[in-house]
Each structure stands twice: as structure tokens, then as C-alpha cells.
Length: 114
Image: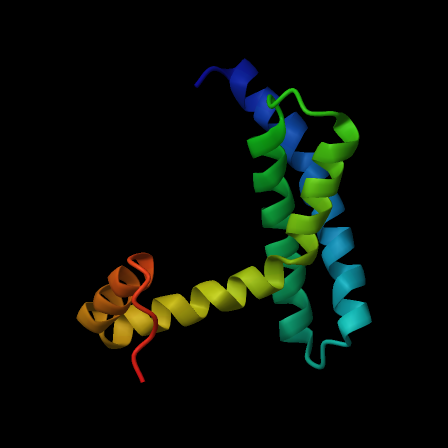
């Protein structure tokens, strides 16, 4: 990548990441996160999710208001997405074959095992 490309990435992801951190901090305050660790993790996840969403929708041609809405939704839900990823990765780590079997069955509409 050229320096101009890196400059473009920074100019798109930087402000969106800052906005994501602010929105995640507000969301964490509303949800009353009990520990500093939970609060900081949520803020970091919100910043990363906001920056990633900004990079994803930057050249989409969608209105700026819609892009901002998507960045805000991603930042506010980043903590929940992070917890979901932790759960999925722990299931994969514990028993990868069972996870793949259940995932394949769910894709085919077979339901869950009981």
C-alpha cells in the first residue's frame, strides 16, 4: 500500500474509532458495567468495531447518515459481539468436531441436539 492509501485508511478509521469509543463508553455507562476491566474491554471493542464498520461502508455510496448509523450500531453492540465470539471460540477449542457437526446440522436445518 502506498502512503496515500494509509492516509485514507487513517482518515476514515480514526474518527470513526473515536466515535465508537465514545458510544461504547456511553453504552457501558448505561448498562452499568461493574468492573473497570469490563468497561475498558467494551470501549476498545467499540472503537475497533466502529473503525472496521467505517472502513466497510466508506465507499458504499450510501448516505452519510446511514453510514453513521451503522457505525453507531456496531460500536454499541461490540461488547455483545465480542462475547458471542468468545463463546463460539470456546466451543471450537473444547470439541472442534462436535462444533463442526452441530454447525453443519444447523445450516441444513436439522435443529440442535438435546
